[in-house]
Image 1 (tube, rainbow, N blue to C red):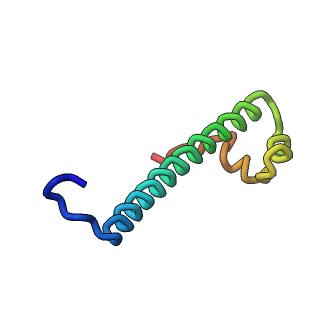
Image 2 (cartoon, rainbow, N blue to C red):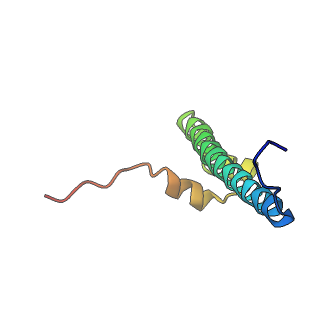
Length: 84
């Protein structure tokens, strides 16, 4: 204990621990959300590569279990033209 400082109560120690644990939880949650976004991007790039190489939408469906319709919706073959 330092000279001139008052002893800490047990509640102060618990409060500091609780604040620390909450910060750790939110930092971990933020990192997990960031990693999930990166993984989704990688998955889309791999599927786009498969479709670009000539694979049908059923082949990535077999590998991922997403559903061929969902894969076709993610990467439409023809883009809609804007109306002027």
